[in-house]
Length: 258
Image 1 (cartoon, rainbow, N blue to C red):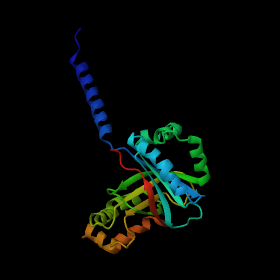
Image 2 (cartoon, rainbow, N blue to C red; image 1 turned 90 degrees about the vertical axis):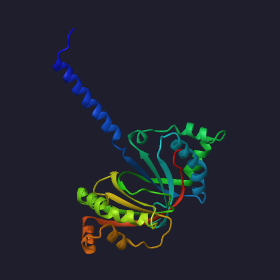
Image 3 (spheres, rainbow, N blue to C red; image 1 turned 60 degrees about the vertical axis):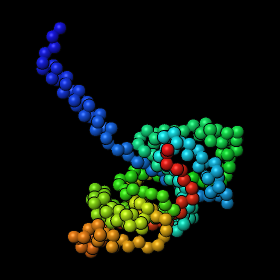
Image 4 (spheres, helix red, strand yellow; image 1 turned 120 degrees about the vertical axis):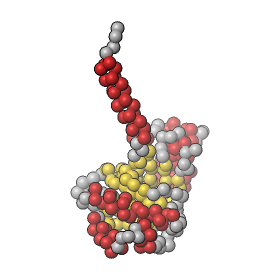
């Protein structure tokens, strides 16, 4: 049987397209998803519960590649009447996000010989989960070890223009602060769920640091953009409404996967 040259060429072209598409998919970075769980503690030992019972379980998931990270934060400065703590979990890609652990098995592996039902009973007695949110990371500097997270929620009517402003104009300023040791990192997130007219924000930025002293933001912006006028940079802030800021302190968290 003789295969015609046009057929061979067509097959070769098809294989080239498949290979290129596969390489492009492999090169594309995974989305970083973030869930934020609003917690209201109901007993004085709530933080101990998270550190001794839940942190080893989350660490086991990270070590197995089923989660990217987990951390517990306490609201240091902000309204604590509803959420006095937040549990923040990050997921590297759709696979981690859609993986549902068998918590009883995870508990058994992390706490051999201990009673799962009693641990869950203690959990339900120590805190109430009042709300959950799902976010996607849009952009960030490298994020290092940190003690504090200043969480700023924003409402941006024009998402494309706002994201361009943060990534092209303000991210270089935040990177200058990180390079100078004033911050541990910065990130921009967009809200996936819940959404609607009842939700007053659709973006958040987070400033990570190991101290709460003021930072030279104006100087950092001028260093990042020496050819631009500072007042013109400030005018760009009209692209979003700053809804609120809270300062969280990190109570406990997982280590990166080995």
